[in-house]
Length: 118
Image 1: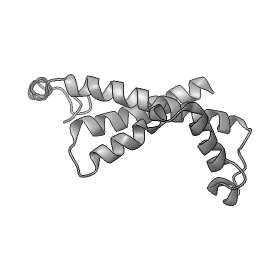
Image 2 (image 1 turned 135 degrees about the vertical axis):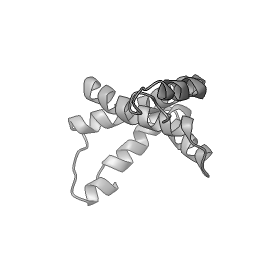
Image 3 (image 1 turned 180 degrees about the vertical axis):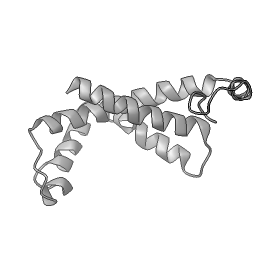
Image 4 (image 1 turned 60 degrees about the vertical axis):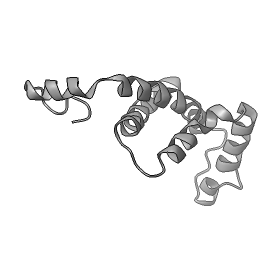
């Protein structure tokens, strides 16, 4: 579960961090707040809300997905808890890179997929 959670958090977290570091849009602070929410709430509250979401009265159970007390139910909290840590640290690192260096790399022939933000 830890390896699967790390892989999924890395992919989603880096994409969110790049998006938040390189763009300005209406509601950016709301998105950042929602991402940071698991760090603000105590673990018992997060666990309670996850049980509500994944349990018998939750929307997933109504849709026919009964995953409470299975390995996906253990994987989901790991992702939920570690995503803000990945996003915040990656966003700070991406924002610290000077964009003129990225433009220079592009001018020197580096392909766009190697240079972030281009």
